[in-house]
Image 1 (spheres, helix red, strand yellow):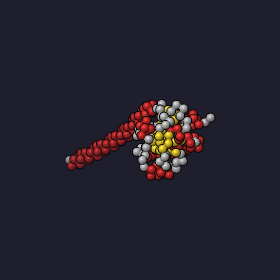
Image 2: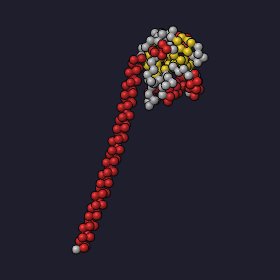
Image 3: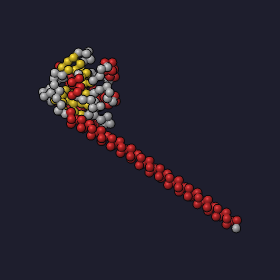
Length: 208
């Protein structure tokens, strides 16, 4: 009788062990499935965020393209001398409009790409326009990024025309009709797209 009892207890313990093992395996599978689903959700959220940002950027590009900038508007150089647009910008000049409030990494990455094109496009054909009132910041910015091209502070009127969209952006200024063309808002996460833009600008305006 006792032997039969021991056998039943043994079978019960074996069943209990297998039941716990089965539950553990199922729990592990559930955790793995949840981890995969969470990873997919995070990736989807990132992609949706990038698509949303890209849509915003393209909207800004369409709004700014064709904007008129009159040649008599004022800028201020690094020696605090006031100058007219006509004095500093020739036809088909590539311009980076940025602010010290913009993402530092974003601005630095664009300047790095501009430095790579300074010989092919030409130093005189690249200009930076900003709104910084801190000359020390501009000097440090220029030194850190090894900038050779000109930087100017925009006057109030020009600043109201070339609006701050929270991100730096590039465009080509045509003095023939006082308009800006080829507006482009770079994406920090998509450097190849910025390279394609700069290459297309090089081929369109600076290669005869």
